[in-house]
Image 1 (spheres, rainbow, N blue to C red):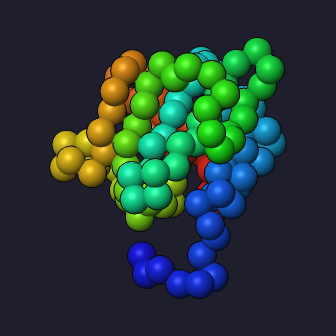
Image 2 (image 1 turned 30 degrees about the vertical axis):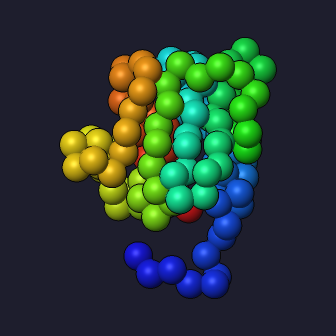
Length: 116
């Protein structure tokens, strides 16, 4: 994946995830919880929250996370695009996971249900 000026910003990527979550909430059934993403090279934090208020993605920290994923922006973009397997990223040291590993495994099916 080459970086171009036409690429959406990280904030826009999370806005697209937020819109996708809200347009297809069925994909999040059984995957309730708070997923937190630490984007290493930006020092930014984002959350994907799936709860009784409905699924959403946002910048910052709204709730305490059950699982925290630390990843560089380029690897995160590949993860969302489906070109980087989360298990391979974790095993290769591109993705660090702290907290509920079961939730982290469920995240792959949520992200894979979207096409950006």
